[in-house]
Image (cartoon, rainbow, N blue to C red; front, top):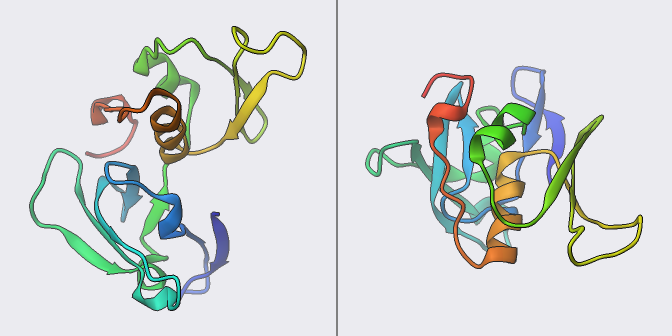
Length: 149
């Protein structure tokens, strides 16, 4: 679950729970796109939950720290219609943009008006959903994002 807290600078900060992440998830760190390279979860001590990540396109120079220490810099990347369009997903599901995110619908499997299977806001949520449904990783070219690589 993503939660909002107050950062060391007094600004609102988003905290991503490591249990919500998978290797390969795309996030933002200090204005740059990064991908998760390692995770270490400790159910007894949240301060021992480590997230490792590198800039997109790199597999070296990993940054690794405990989740609460990263809350000022590590952020989820919002999904946009542009991202969906550029992904060219051919997985049999449709999406509909809503006020705060995207409704993912499975029209071919559910034959009524309540065909929403998920509501997602961030790219890592889409990656996780895709992996759960397709049993493979969603590879994303960082060039589709409107931010520095």
